[in-house]
Image (tube, rainbow, N blue to C red; front, side, top):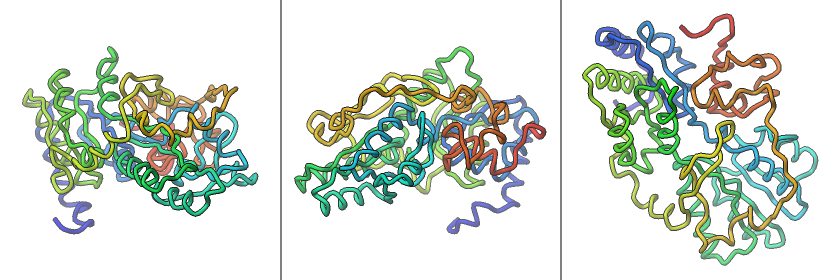
Length: 367
């Protein structure tokens, strides 16, 4: 197939669903890790069309959603400083901190700017040497190479007014933490294709072997997901467990080695707090000592922060797949995309936002 609409062919989708119905003998539980995959599954109604009893568990693959509240509160405190130009991707502007969000700060006069690449922030720093320019560097392995390149470029330019507020998280440790939970129901994973386009899938092989779970690297279109689910179910039905690649048009086992080299040069692995989940060992990236001068958390020693999650929000349970958005008493009433209590309702990859956009209600739950 060459064109996008070919990955949305309803006749082929029906064939894949029929094949799933033919081979599935048990009510399997499969987790899609990526929030982009969640939106496709929910928007297209794929999760409701699967064979009876089969269920998709929506995982913690929304980088905006898992950014810890303490990082967001630190971002607000830094952005409010008069000498700072605070830059971010647009999807972070409405994510609620304890008391406010970046969009509200901008409305009150803070210099908060949406950029489309961290290199835009480097250019602002080069052109405005009188201002401190901070970029909010969040995301999984997908966005880490671009942020690493921004640091390397700023170093080459000799910039002293550019820094990153880093909150990078890593997918494999999160999968391992989920599987180590004695209450875990996940029997197979759909791995995020864009993460694997950078990192490859070698890191998933020990996870599949240790926990005896199939892992299928999967794309984001309806047919990608249906084929990925089918590949996972075939492994489950045959008693196999290993890593397979559905997303062959974009992913290879070794990934993008040049991107990996850039990430390893600038960052090192560290423990990381995940919003609503807690601290997972070895699940994040931080700047190496050689690039510590670009660390906004060190440059701006913000004190006195007391992060406090909204007590009604069940984001942690939603992010780990333990609860559905419709289980939340505030869903669709006190928590909406216009007035979110938590990040999963406002993020473009959040599960709550996906359910709300698809019109999922408490009265019409998933089968």
